Image (cartoon, rainbow over all chains, first blue to last red; front, side):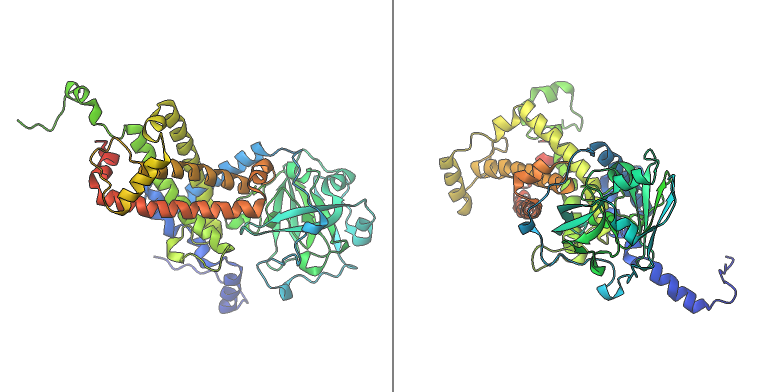
Length: 260
Length: 209
């Protein structure tokens, strides 16, 4: 068998491998089906190559896509996430990420600009001061993590649908795709109907204080109709698009719609 | 002379012999598979954020990591829900529930529990469930309904917020979901043990008689 090399001139091979490994998900994730292949093979996969774990993985991906469609169908754009009294707020509200707080993006608010791209009339970038001048509302809602825990918090900011209207976004487009300052480049797509939900918010404050670094300074997108990982923090750009561009966790197997 | 084949007449002549009709057998085994998939993937999901001071051993979880566990859980849920719904509808429509699981009288239950604990509860006639069986089988159906409803509530806490409200709030629904799983596991242990102790009941669930 011919040996193929993927050498990049001037790049240390070992360092390249080391860096690549860092960007790869936990090796067990790639083999996440391995443990279940035999069980799934019992009946779910009759007719498929039962020894091939990739066929089980493919089947699960298809069901996940089906679940995206079911959730989009169930989604009621007028159904509001329950709101709570201030006394119900979880203290302290947990910091949660795939890195430690020390490794969280340390964004300089004075330099930061929100980039607006894609199917919008006005592609101007927004400074924090400009965004702070937009009308803001406060919501006290429950953040539900894909891991199962939940916490109630108070978020203040501008409804995303007001901002989309302001920049002349084509709201018939399928997604608003967010990119973030997190290491490894966090990103996440938000379906347009959820983006236009009245409670979906560009959040600038937590508990009436400027959004702290732990919760996504300078801006997070609060989507109480989605699981936590679909609430991106440290947002640097939003793109209105018809293309499904994938997301940090979505690409690793979390259900893409993940609606509440 | 013994023959391996049976004519339609012979089958029709002995209809009473069928203890578990085909629909019960099919749905039972589909449910068994769906339950096992749901439990093992559910343990994977539990491990991502344990409710109590323990985790499930990795070898007994499905999916390899949280994302894989979730994919299994939300795939097997369709199998569990569709099969379960079909079972409930058929069970009520055919009168099987009314005939097999009821009545459940306190005195009957007390009598049979006492008999069971002193190993005097017979299984001579498999077509009639004793009161311990009736309570357990009716009870596990209720638990099955609860675990699906609490699970649906956790899946859609905004769209189905009334369902979450029914259980109290989101964290409470999570605990109820967990305890229903624990009840099903406990049931499973007893159920499998007794099926092995009374092999003809297992045979009836496979070939019907």
